[in-house]
Image 1: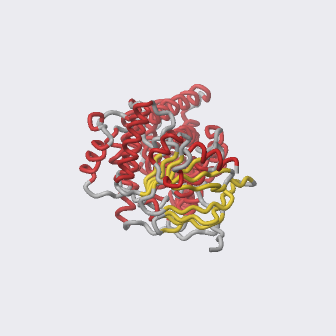
Image 2: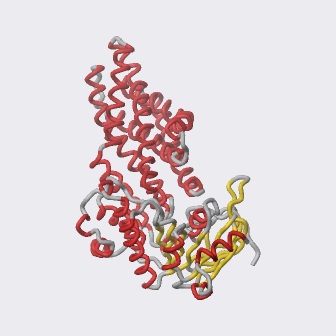
Image 3: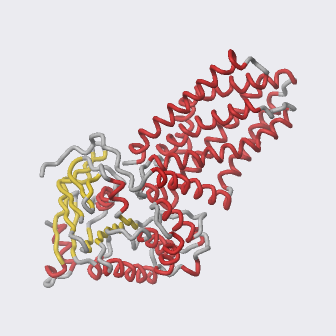
Length: 243
Length: 232
C-alpha cells in the first residue's frame, strides 16, 4: 500500500453520540473546573487579590477629582480585568498540564471543540466571579454608581471576547517553557479591539451617552468580535492541540 | 487490531519515525522495546491520536487515523508515566469526570466497580494529590479501563514506581491481557516485559529492527535478543 500524505486537511471525526453527548461533555469539563476551584480556590484567589491590588494602585497613583473619575472609570476597570484575566488563563491551562491532564482530555472520544468550549466557559465563569466582586469594591473606592444594566451587558460581552481568544492562545502557549511571559505578549495585541470597544461602550453607559449614536457601534464591534473569534477557535482548535 | 504501514513522523527537520511497519493481532500483548530517543513515545502518541503522522497509514480497531480519531479514542485506553488525573478532585470524582467525557451509562456503578478493581475503594473520597505515586498509577489504570477499551497502550508504566507498586501493576496488566484486550507496552524493564508480553518488537533509530514471538525466544533470553537487534 502506498503511503499517503496525512497532513492534508482531515474530515471531522464522527461524534460517537449526538448533540446531547456534546453538551454533556462540555458541562463535564465546566463541572470539573468549578469543583476543583471551589476546593482549592488557587486560581480565583490569585485573580481576586491581583485585581484589588491593581485597583488600589490606580486609586493612589491617579488621585483623581470626582469629574475625572467618571471619565476614566471604564479604562481602569478593563485594564484590571485584562491583567487579572491573564493570570487566570495561564493558571487554568497550567492545571491541565499538571499530571498530564490535557492528554487525558484529548484522549476522550469527543470532538476537540468540546475541550475548547468547556475551558472557555470555565474561564468566563472565573472572570465573571472576579468582576462581580471587584465592581462593588471599585464603586466604593471611586464613589461611582456602577449598578447599570448596560454596563453589566458590556462586561459580559467583553469578557466573552476576552476568554474566547484567551482560551485559544493559552492552549497554544501552555506547551511552551516561557508560557507565563508568552501569553500576554500574544494575547494583548489580539484583544485590543475588544478592550477599546468595551472601554468606549462602558464609558458611554457610565457618562449617560446616547445609546444609538455613541454606544451601539461599540456594542456591534463587541458582538462581531465575539462571534468571529469563537468561530475561528472552533475551526482551528483541533490543530492547536495536536502535535 | 492495529495496522501501521510506512509511518513517518517529522518534527521540523528532524525525522523521528522513518517508515515503521507494525501489526498487532487482536488479543496480542506486544512489548515495544528500544533505547531512549528511539521514538517509542512518539509512536504510541500517534497510535493514541495525540500526534498526527507526517506520512503513512495508521489504523486502530478498524478506524483510520487521523480522520476517524474520535472512533479510535472510544476503543482505546492509555496509561503513561503521567497519571492524567486532577489533583484537586477525589479518586471517585476523577473517574466520574472521565466517565462523563466517555458518555458512559450507569456511571456510579462503573466507578465503584473500577475503584474496587484497582484496590482504591477505601480512598475513593480522598483527593488525588494526597495519593502516593503508586496509588496514582493504580487510579490511572482505572481511568484507562473505565470505558472497557479493546486496545490498551502503556507508555513506560513502571516509571517511578516502588517494588510493591510494580507488582500491583504486573497483576493489573495480567488481568488486562487475560480479558483478551490487545496491549502495546513500551518499557525499559526487559525482565517484566519478558514475563508479560507475547511478542517483542525493537524500535531503534525510528524503525522496527527486530520482532520475535515468545515461542521464537526459546533458545535465547530477551536481553540477548534485544542486544542483537540493537547491534544489527
